[in-house]
Amino acid sequence: MQTINSTILNPLFGLVFGGTMVLCLVLAVTAPFTTDESHVTLRGIGSALYAVGVFVETMVINVPMNNTLEAVDPASDEGASYWRTHFQQCSVLAANRRREWGDAVAHLL
Image 1 (tube, rainbow, N blue to C red):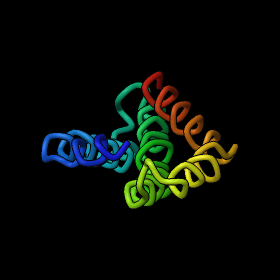
Image 2: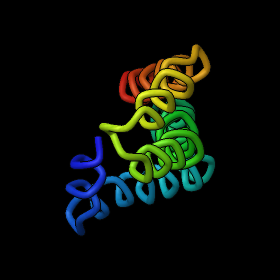
Image 3: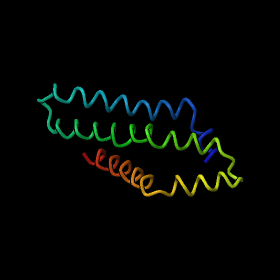
Image 4: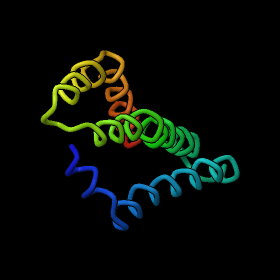
C-alpha cells in the first residue's frame, strides 16, 4: 500500500482523476440549462453521482486512511494492529461498496 501511495501521486493520475471530477461538475452544472438535449436529467444525475459517490468518498474516507497507513511500519505490530482495527471494519468495506456502486450507476446513466 505504501508503494501504491507513492506511485499514484503523479501529474498524470492527478490530471485524470481531477479532470474527470471537473468534467462531471461542468456536466452537472450545465445540465439544467441544456433542456433541448435528450437525457439531460440522466446526465446531471450521473455526473453528481460520480462527484459524490467516487471523488468525495475517496477524498474524505480513503485518502486519510491511506495517509495513516503510510505512516505506520508495515512490519511492526502497530502496523498489523492498525490494519486489523481500521481497514477491516464494516464501515470501510461499506464505503468501498458505495464508491463502486456510485461509479457503476454514474457510468450506466
